[in-house]
Image (cartoon, rainbow, N blue to C red; front, side, top):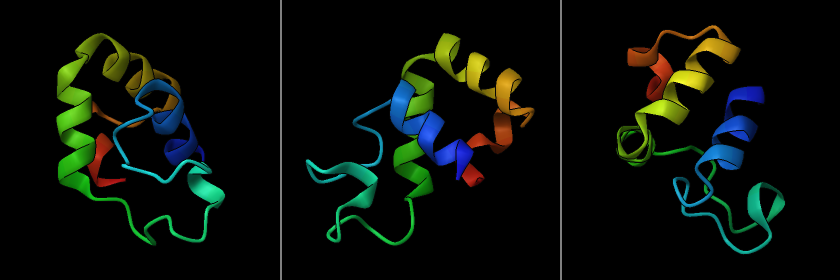
Length: 64
């Protein structure tokens, strides 16, 4: 859950969430890794921060 929350903080549009965010019943059950990777690639500096703080190698961030 922490990686998902961090992603939503740094890349709020990446998950295409409804206005209520992650708690909205209309939110998708699974995050789309393609959308996540697209968002990460749009700002590699933020992606590097996420990678370091979450201790997840950058290439694996979208898969988590």
